[in-house]
Image (cartoon, rainbow over all chains, first blue to last red; front, top):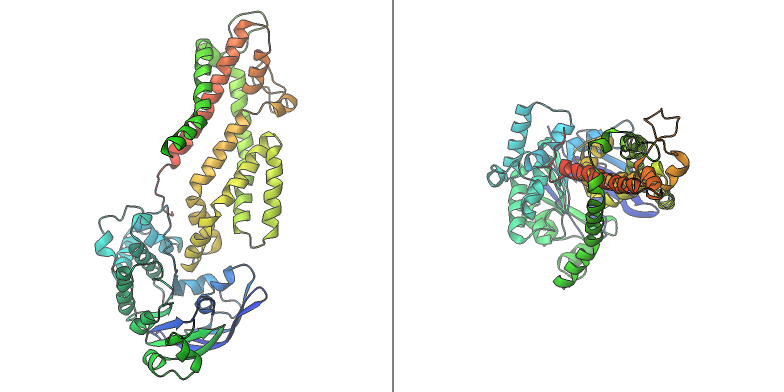
Length: 252
Length: 241
């Protein structure tokens, strides 16, 4: 069913500044693809282009082709709302809806999508919380505010919220950068679990994290994709000098 | 430090307590059933009430809220969601100016307008979270952002209502006051602040007492409305429906 995402000649701008330049990249289905690079290299912008979240920022613009399930998500007539339903996203900072309970947070996307049947909602929420490895910790406090959970739990709540609408792809924008090492380890385990059913693209600042979870890794620098390949190869035998400098800590 | 902050908090609360206490002391004796159910007596007669003014104030408040709050809230949403940078600045500036102009509808309009955008800091990340779930923007605003900002909106609306309830000067020229029951919206209408003003400058002791009582009723009215709004929104964990 899933055949990944294929990106061709993708360019993105914030106002006058050209932040992504001719990106070509193929994301494999049911695998984890990591995007690494120094701050400001365009890696967050890149994954935001994959579910049309880049364009919600004032002055932002995208040109190029992003094929998912054989459809160009940027072709005219494609509804960005529909694209985001299929391609979910988790953000850097956990952002549960502050006035909602744990249950309502997870159910939010499903409810707003028009599902009202309580039995369906219960089932979807429970399944999503199991998938996000959070069920055991919150099953007795589903009616408590989601904002009352710990940072790591909140992030897994956000993952559950994204999973509840049953996307085919999950984009993660530095999902662990606000978390401690233990919470980070849990999310990484979770990512490896999730890739059995989902295509995952993760942006990370942390090269060890990319090495631990990703099947393929892309290195971005100044809005360009410098190198892309199997993770083990990129970290052990990089082809490009700039990649080598970055992963050996000589700059960035 | 703790003592200082406590003292500062006390200094802020003290005037309200003093005013309220003084009103109780001066006004409570003139409050009775007649005060809430009867028209003012003709000049020189003792007794009567301010029923017409209380009703008049409620009508004015209701109308002003009906006209002002939707415009204010919608304007605020527009400002918070707008992608343009200059327009929100202009609108906010104009709202601030309007805010300095005492007027009954404008008061409510401007306050809500100014309060809502202050919630923006959280709206940005909420909005993204909602959009990323594949929810149309209007639904995100209506069912996620607005409910989350509800406490702030209610506070803004209450401040506005309280301010409007006590507004006297514009009423002198617009509502004019009326010593009889409500005659229709195209006729002069009674209002508590006006009646208090008229009675307070009159030379009769009985009217002075009634003016105190009127002030007490006005402040209690505002207090009750604010309390109710607080209770309705307090700590409620909302769901999308």
